[in-house]
Picture 1 (cartoon, rainbow, N blue to C red):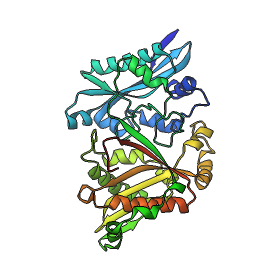
Picture 2: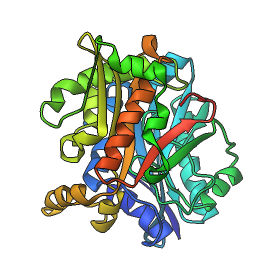
Picture 3: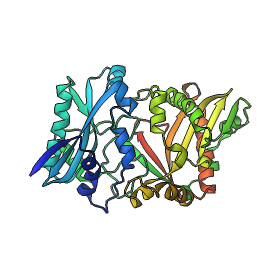
Picture 4: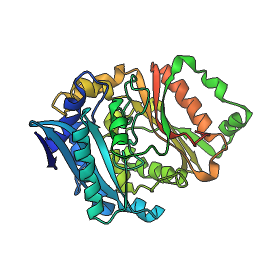
Length: 346
């Protein structure tokens, strides 16, 4: 028997494990983080400019699929759309369950007056988005999505079409020469006294996060689907960064005391999440601190340059700094989250 349930968090959290099996590359965020992301009262994105519910499909009492149905009013207002969204779509190779879930999200949006639905958004374009259509054999990094090959087939069967192609990347650091990136124009930037090159430190992070948010918003202003983050939204997403950050693999550029560029990497937490089954417990924090010292995979989570300085080589200099720092710190690979296929400079 197939049953649709709404707002059953435990079933929602467990659904991918039942759908894909314990040996799949799928990794969930911590259960506590997922719960606060989906909380309409705690998540400022939902409290101030959106609404959300979530569904699970249960077959014979066992969760075999899930998704969110939500709306981002700020996105609709900024871009002139009338869209609702689905996200966190994970499902067994079960067309009946997939149809039940997608119909629920479509009805939810239709009942609120929206005329189209897009997905997969977890929960906006500034969070993990998309559906993996190739490269299924590669385990994802933090902030990257993974799904098995049957997911795009289930979506196509339900009438969904591909849109906005993009890619995730992995860089093997031993194959990269950081010095090859620098040309005369980049060395001129390094010697320009108006720029100060620094790092993101865990101490005092709360004070610098609003500055990083402002630089990020400015740098992404003209990107497709972008909606500026409020300081509260940015802080909400970066809540636990102090426990994760490795200052060695970060770069912040200031010009006359204003943050004009940032490139922030963190150790890839997915191997740790897999070991603790994405559940926060009393031993999680000590294990995190130990794991951080041994981690050999890192991932880019923020990269931005203010518009007035774009195409000047600032990003290349930051990449040079980061690549050298990653190799010196013993990291072996770097993951890069989604970049649109049309974004040739990135």
